[in-house]
Length: 67
Image (cartoon, rainbow, N blue to C red; front, side, top):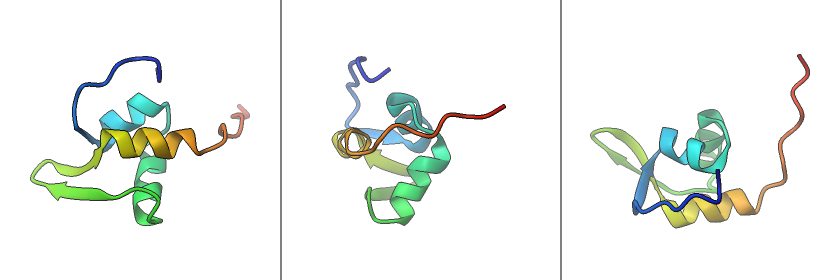
């Protein structure tokens, strides 16, 4: 999904998760850990598109899921 063009300046947590292929929990963890700055709006937390994509680019791939 990262090859898709994102035109919004800010994303909700759900949009950030979809754009990066990460889970919403991961995005929240990045915010709590200071890796990603978020602003609180009436709709919840928003993150800047460029910041979330940069944070995702700095991470390594997730662990494979064992089912």
